[in-house]
Length: 145
Image (cartoon, rainbow, N blue to C red; front, side, top):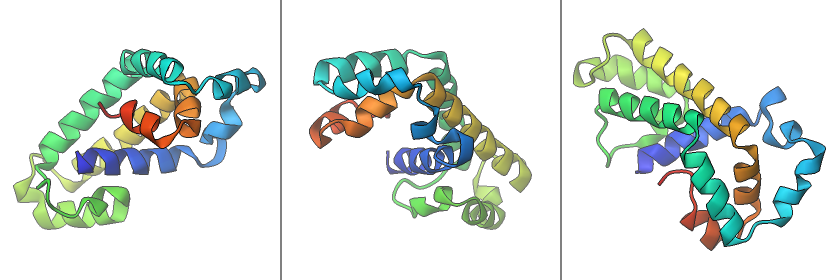
């Protein structure tokens, strides 16, 4: 689970730059979603998000990536937070993974970033409400089930 969270963090960090900044991409009438941060609204948006095509694609790709990475859950998850660290780790541990090459691993990582951007874009209301919700609601309706 720690590695999932690390992947999500890096993906969200990447999504917050330039045109992909979530705060800059919401339409002006989306402020209504911000005021509806009750558990009921967040739960509804969470259910919609986890059933969305973009979520299902991202989840499958991430599961495949983690399976191929063959990473020890208790290991240093910071390797997936930085492309260079990941590349160095894959280079040193390629034989322990199911990737055919370092380039294959990096390409898969890059695809995950694109899929995460699609997920955030398709589910902007969820992420906006989740971000403004109290911590207990954020934990309950986290974007990783």
